[in-house]
Length: 99
Image (cartoon, rainbow, N blue to C red; front, side):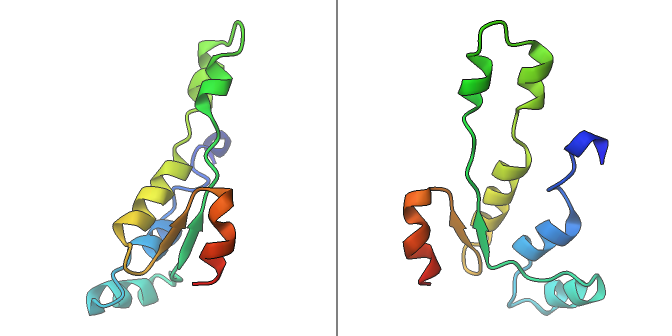
C-alpha cells in the first residue's frame, strides 16, 4: 500500500509486539482482532548515510530511503522488553536464538 510505505506499520504487527501479555484486556483485544504475539524482532537497519552520500542524490530518493518500519518495530519490541527480544546486530544472532 502507498508504494510500500505501510508495509510494516500494521496493527497486527504492532499489536503482536506491544501487547502486555500479563494484562487480560490486552490479550482479549488481541484474540478479538486475531493478533498473534511476536516474540522476537530481528532488523538489520540500512545505513541512510550511504544513500544520501551518493553523488547527486535527489532529495526524493533520500526521503524515500528514510526507514520508518525498522526503527518503529525495534522501538515497539523494546518497549515490551519483558516479552519481546530485539536483535539488530547480525553478530548477535547466535546468542539470540538460544533464548
